[in-house]
Image (cartoon, rainbow, N blue to C red; front, side, top):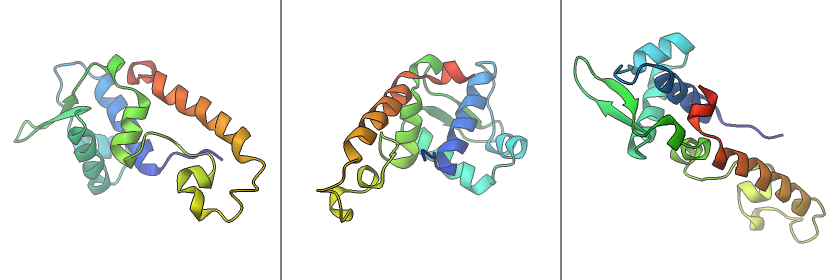
Length: 135
């Protein structure tokens, strides 16, 4: 079954939260961790990855926190997945998730092609849907 990692889930929750606030508000990691009961240290690492990819901007200091790096209608869900996981696609089947050589029945598998079609549709949705659409 299709499953987003906890890191991706937390990243989507965080970026959605930031996007739902007034544009001038700087949102802290602590605020989000407390509100959504996300482990602070894990959330901080996720926010670092989102910052590295330019999806959010980090401000340091007493009044520090995070704001969106782009408009919410310019951030695709696949951008968030890529920033956190280092790959663009969500994998429905293991041979696509890892590599074909890791599957001992890859050459004779009769379901990889139909499931790959479904995977392409799912990834297309992630490539088209923006953060603005989930706010």
